[in-house]
Amino acid sequence: MRWDLFLILMLLPWAATFGGSLMAARITLRTPKKQGGLLGFAAGVMIAASVWSLLLPAFEEAGERVSGALTVTLGFLLGCAGMLALDKLVPHQHLDGEAPEGHSSHLSRPLLLVTAVALHNIPEGIALGVVISAAMLDSGMTWTAAILFGTGLALQNLPEGMAVVLPLRQTGASRKKCIRLGFLASLAEPAAAVLGLLLTAALSGMNAVVMPLLLSAAAGAMIFITVEELIPESQAGNHGHAATYGFLLGFWMMALMGVLGG
Image 1 (tube, rainbow, N blue to C red):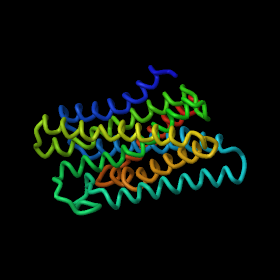
Image 2: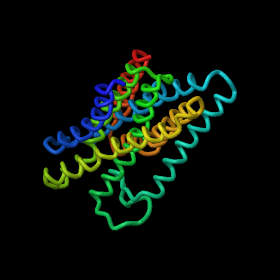
Image 3: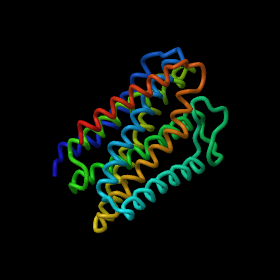
Image 4: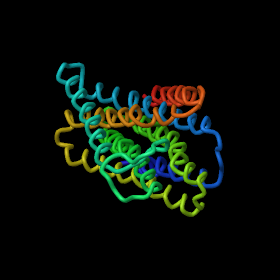
């Protein structure tokens, strides 16, 4: 067991999310175009990471059989359904949204923005836990590929951490409040990673079926939340082509990392 790599994988994406919050509390991006570019970059990284680091290893682990393809398909659908349920149940509000979504609550707008970012981070964290487990079990995942996956999450978590704090900062919230809320949002990913690890460990006896199922479910959750929320947020407003360029850059950077990690 490589405990050093394990700690790096657990801490790096969290540190990037919180680091983005700290940066946003101290700088000002006054143009929507810059924010759109950052969110587009995050969306591109998430889509590419889902394909190269989750779906392709899931198909490889499941084998070239009809049953394997069905297992991966089932996992993908379960991941999408899980995120749809969370989107309907958890109270949250998007950056450009006028009204909260999910169940009605008495949470303030800042906390609703935090829960929206936490929703983004939950599938990423579960995926991270599954990837770590796959590397530990040598099940379709090398430690190099796992490290590159974690690095990809960190790359997209930086602009996501900035995205939750920038609107608050620009409306006059204090730096201390922004940092506090950014820290709360950053905790969702490591907590979800632990959940992914525990879930994989509990089902390790059925590894031949469970690992591709979990990998594809994590991919489905990440792709769903990206298409449902992150891409529309990046394209909202008059951003020009900034969000599109950001997406393409993030996608291709993560695609290259996925190939190198393979």
